[in-house]
Image (cartoon, rainbow, N blue to C red):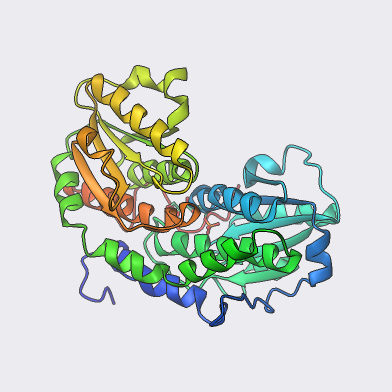
Length: 369
Ligand code: F6R
């Protein structure tokens, strides 16, 4: 049942190219046009949307954070992403022109369910992004876009996360398409790139041996820090969450721009810092800033583990360990940048003798508050 893998988590990491491809299947036609008729919210309603609010917990929340960048960039609709457990107790401002997106692998997470109930009571339309057919969250939503990751058994979410990202990109691009905007060409290009992301994830998986070796070498560390900017920031948070839940280590993710506002005080000799580097193409300011962040922490003794695109030579001199990922459009990078972090956490946890499929104190589906 584990298909020759030692753990479900390893099997599920390996299944990601297929999970991504399956989630895209039938939703993009040959000419880069999205067909999401299954999301039964009329074009009329979608054109009227003036605010998007994404609610989710844990890893699904990180997917939602990334979706905010994509939705605002491609559609220019204001979007906020909030932890479901905070949202529902905050008296949020919603109305019939608000589109609420609830992201949940299991479809049973109590906090996310309560958040969507609250949103519907205020008259908002709720779209669920969910991996489990017929579960409570899609049943109670106005519409659903299913992720096709297949059953996820390991407690730590991997393939479900990647497919949540794919679903978020599809929704963002669909909103842009339905509403029509001046980014028409960029959007068609990105749709074509998105269609090929399964293969890029496969490429990453083929190059993970040095990451495993690196992880084994860090098994006796107490702390690992993660830095990112832009969409790399939620990727850093997700990398830290995976390491906490699997390796039971102190792991923290930061927005790289926040370093000097506090976290840089944590940098000491030989502390491993994983840095997710944005594409040097696209918005190159972001890239230059993170290169100086890497220099800053290295000057203070950090052991830098740098995740950067192929061809990005500017980071190489400051990387103690360099992990290459394929080139992608800026907003799609999380689909490839997250994979080495999953492999890293899984291997490090195993090296520490932990049971990766069933981490202590955690349950696969959190049906209590
Ligand atoms: C972490 C993890 C959790 C879930 C969270 C939400 O690896 O799996 O953080 O992402 O409990 O679960 P769902 O998506 O089922 O609502």
